[in-house]
Length: 427
Image (cartoon, rainbow, N blue to C red):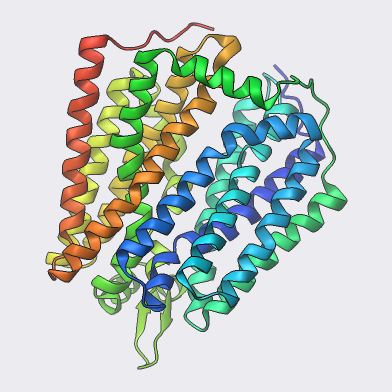
């Protein structure tokens, strides 16, 4: 079967996605370090992280409705007009309320943006090229998500303002590309009103079994998932011997590679920057296809739960890196990334396939609520980390998170054994 070539808007949209993830993750991964730099408590940081993540993942539930009514291009531009001034405000505002409101605005912009590029990709692909198309899209997410923290980290080592300027420039480029190169893709408009959207979501959630399942996912998968990204950069930067991390990385991969993730501090010591390594994007780019090929042969729920086990072991190694050699952190990140690659795609695919075909989008929209619930509560672990750090044992937070995942495995296993797994549809 011949594969349909991708239209120009496909590549334009993916370029925009790289730039947006560059800006978003460049700010998000280093944000805990920035709040500590300003002297705020971990409880205050947790509040901002929770609101930011909840807004980022609750807004996509409804923003696609506006895209259907007004067009992808117009709604993309609206998201940039919320993004750009908010990022620039981070340079000016230093008060807690000002930072919280600014991050809320960035979360709103990201939430508006989030479904639009994937929606474009879905619109301009067909059965001959959709798998490749979404594979390219997922890779672009991880390219931007990997390079954003690296560039922002090296810039903030000079001045935090430079890191925020880089993110703002990225959004500015997106605005330019969208205005001059993004062509609205042709598609059928569903014409669903916002009121109908809410009614449909409530209809999906009226299935009590499905609603309970989403809550379990929010509390036992997405909550500890977000805690990893909320905490790891701060933990690495402030609690591990990052000079030793640099030397270990240099001994294995060479000076040039190690320098890419590090910066020389005021005392002349070269150290790894926490946010440059504290994410999974670079691992996902390399291993996702390989991991997916292995686990596509197995049933969804057992695969999902096995991924949680792998992630829990990864958390244990993150804690162990504080007690033993800091380089164990790399194994912890690798294992968490493998757990993420097994669990996250499988559970989202599962939710799509348990829905009636005409309600697949509705069920996936409801899934954003589970992701949002996890994000909303995730700031609790930032507070817990702060308490453990005051006790001079910040590593304890990772052992608690590992236990959290194990409890989640037990809870979801009990759920599926008592109420039964959802039936995946054939088509």
